[in-house]
Length: 103
Image (cartoon, rainbow, N blue to C red; front, top):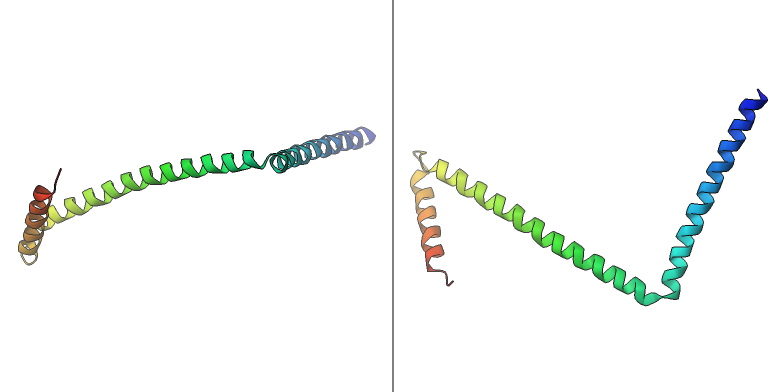
C-alpha cells in the first residue's frame, strides 16, 4: 500500500513540475514580447500574411471547383425539354462574353 502511495506522490510531483515548467515558459514568452514589442508586431505581421495567402489560394481553388460544377450541371441541363433552350442561351452568352474579354 505504501509503495502505491509513493508512486502516486511521485507522479503527482512530476505532473506539478511539468505544469510549472509549462507556465514559466509561457510566462517567459509573454515577457519576451513585452520587452520587445517589435518582435510581436513582426510575428503578427507574418502570421497575417500567411493567413491572407492561404485564404486567397483556398478561395481560388474553391471558386474554380464551384464554377466547374455549375458549368457541368448547366451542360447536363441543356438536354431537358423545358429549360434546355434557356440554358443553351445562357451558355452561348457566357461563351460570347468570355471571347470578348481583353487578354
